[in-house]
Length: 406
Image (cartoon, rainbow, N blue to C red; front, side, top):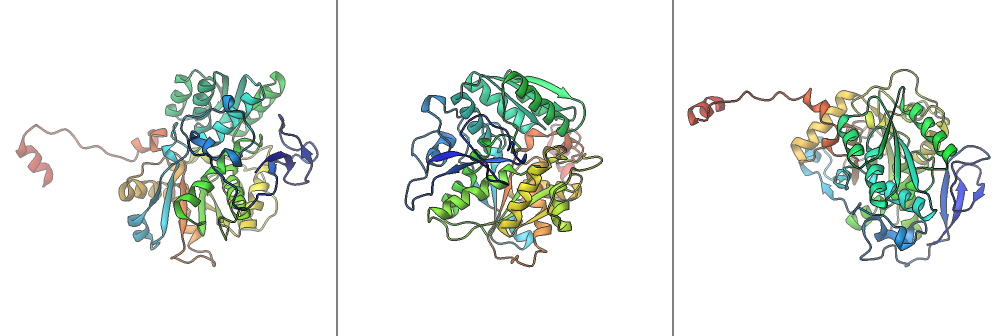
């Protein structure tokens, strides 16, 4: 595969492989396009680090500009005990919390920072609820680049610490994530920086998300029937589906997965549009506070990103769901207690979405289902402190312990 350029996902306007944000004609996202894949051509280069293992399927970046912290290669775990509880014998969890900074964001960040470096850009920016900022801080440090991270005043301290320890410049912004998004974007335009915010603003980071599809194929030998993904804007969902389209063109899979956009009910603009049968996605009004703060994006000012994700969900024959906070926290506890996976609430939204998936007319309990768990629980410990009551200390005697057992 060879990257040929960029193309608008809505009007097909073409651009070269340069520093572009969105389509100048219709304001929809741009995507990287490739020549027609040749069946049998390799998708990997053994020995390449992290994301660059799949270099043949990625935009061109010279070896000296390829930045990696060993991202990717995350485990796919057969969730037998959780599956037994839910009546889903073929339930799997793709644990993206095992990436270097603890979330799936390391995949798109590795791609974005590397491409920025190849363009000669010295400063990169993102707007972030936490994970993308922590990831950019680490990869920019690895690349010797300057990073500005625009966050909301609700960003968890654990994620702010990750950003700060890597030497990134943190810019707290009053308001919603949409407010931080627009300030980061305008700053990038004024000072000629590269904005790698993990929406669809830049077309390159989503190419890193594709690598989840390649790994699932290697781990399963086929495409899953359903893939459930926590979604704020949707580049991970779109990237995974794009990866499977490429695998199909290469003759490696004979079917495509149905994609499930899993949102929190407190901020669910894409799920709201899907459930109402709308073709457009509108910005979320009112409060967006939820335990799944990592996907609480109202999409204000970039609603076309949500429309793009909605179209991919519909194209795949999938659905968009919205889970209440209680369902999300229950899913988080079940993952930890039954499967040993400690996920932040945002990362467990895909598991909470199983409740909605099981109501779908095309769903069957024996189908192969993959839930992508997007972030480690150590990212957001404060929410768990309110859920857990710790026991009082006892004297260091067996009698005291025996009494405790009683």
